[in-house]
Amino acid sequence: MQYNYILLNEGFYRWLETNHLQIQSQLLFLKLIHLFNISGWSEWLAVDNQRIMSLVQTKREKTFIEWRNKLLGKKLIFYTKGRKGSPSKYKLNDEITFISEAKSEVKSEVKSEAQTADIYKQNKTKLKKENTAHAVQKKTAYGEFKNVFLTKNELEKLESQYPQEFEAIIDYLSSYIEMKGYKAKSHYLAIQKWVVLAYREQKKREENLIRGVNYGSYSQQKPRKICTEYPE
Image (cartoon, rainbow, N blue to C red; front, side):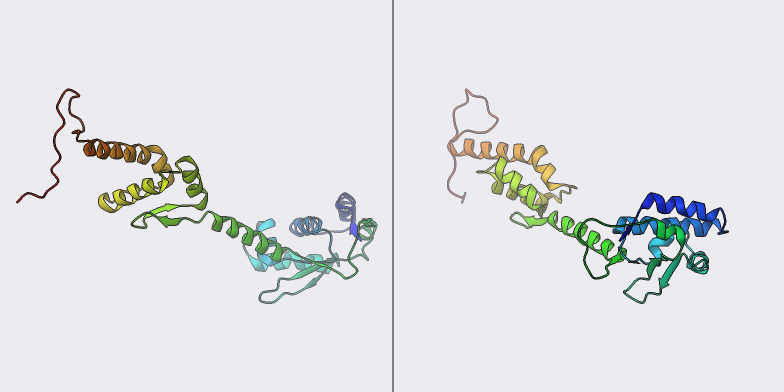
């Protein structure tokens, strides 16, 4: 069984025409209906006080309890007090006419046993998924001095862009950080912005020196002989 959300809301407003209920308790009942709806209309709704207090915008638990007691006094809901690690549970009272009239048969498959829609557990599952997603983006230290921090995805991009050079490029930045104390919010962006160019420039200078050319000299200047021995 489940409820027709629109009929339940309309029925509640018709009920209010002949029954007095303070406005805060009205809001609380409507929020509970909303939670029942997003939970799939399970028989019992498990939700902690802080979640409902946030929905009705009150920070005082005593005030929230007073509003809830009004609903219990009108017998609109049933309530089971929770305990540590297990939130309170709520159930709509089908003996109230407008609630009973809003019931409708579910044509889809339903489990034979009563299910509890635990909003508290739903929030924990969502948080767990967010933490898992964050863990995927966790950065690992790379480079000669283990001070270049990249995510797995960033490392794979560098390997794809610079298959023959990416390790040397990372080592270049690692040495620069160790020597200069260089800091950057994103080592990946630093590599893309200037490290690749700087590494290649240094590599070019080293290759020129190996060929006996003094990097930066005029092209017509004769190559200098490289000293291969330490001076006495």
